[in-house]
Image (cartoon, rainbow, N blue to C red; front, side, top):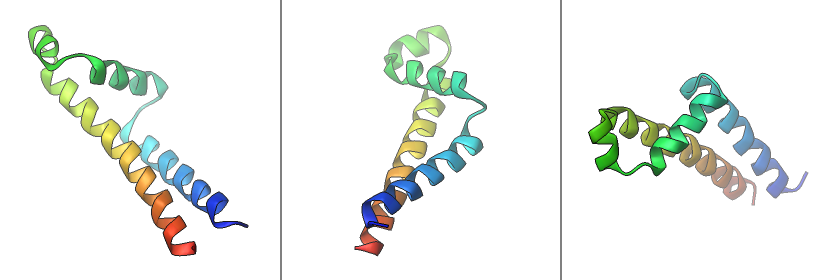
Length: 78
């Protein structure tokens, strides 16, 4: 199997495992995405500033670690 396909498989596996750990379902992912596009001042006025920050951190962790796992697998196999 070419390294590209193997690294994509590793990245998707890590993304799925992190999804299970960080989110309760796809509705929560969409809420995190909506909150990440809401300006911080509006979230603060709505009293959701901490929820907004945590949503951004969870998205960053989920996507960042998944990408780094795929990139690391590709670098190790090349």
